[in-house]
Image 1 (cartoon, rainbow, N blue to C red):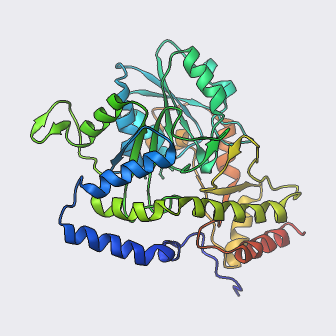
Image 2: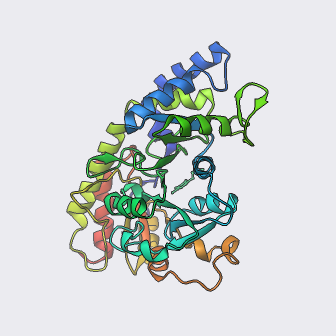
Length: 369
Ligand SMILES: Cc1ncc(COP(=O)(O)O)c(C=O)c1O
């Protein structure tokens, strides 16, 4: 018998506090009759650039496209190697492969689950042309060390910020250290109601190139300067993202408060590793992942008690069927062990502190506490 009903996420509940404003915004777009690259996108771009503290922002169709376009903006030579964490969502690696470059996987730091900066330098070869970092789960990478290595080797940085809207390292926003690729997939801390993304940049040239690429390589209609693609953020998504952006800090703060409950209740359980907290990082907990050797049993215990969880991610990218040839014979034991033990607990804007306390009670019961 399930006593509780706590979903891992509920997009309907999550969006309920924004519903009326979103409906007004969408109806405004319907009435305007301009649906692609209009004033909503332009305003969202300005507002999001200001939020991130970047000079420019261009809306695109998805986070994957933002990463692909970032690689195109850099104009890397054929045969380039791009350093990327072994522990990430597949999209980061797909972007590199889609562009015909070689992803060079670097193990994560087991404490942060993010790329281990201390392992980057030994992965650099004469073919290395960029470093792509991922601020996974809503925790910023150690960007001071990474930028120092990147500037010493004259390598540009791309930041995959799909999970890190509002996350900071030493007070500085993710997305401002390199080219910042954001996803607004519906579950993200800033989530649309469909696919959406953005690339934030610091130079006008990079911004202009991004805008051309996303729109068929064209600055002036029917005149094509580069081989572009169709990757435009649409007016509907931009209009509702503007509504949600105004409360992004509130969403992040709510998630941070829920995380505090987890730390308070779950610290000190021997076979349960909680996400690392450090004074340098302002975490936004896109995901609150715990790690335990008893992951599958714990997940089943929570499920049978009515609590939803997720696994981010069950299979490490280099072990995915699609990547078999690419990474054949390579081993990334730290990344693999994260994938084998990680469990994501509920931590949504739609959850209350009381619900999280109930989750903790069930977890403590499982560990006999
Ligand atoms: C780390 C990471 N990178 C990239 C992406 C791709 O974003 P999108 O689904 O918007 O293409 C995601 C989305 O889930 C992600 O989590």
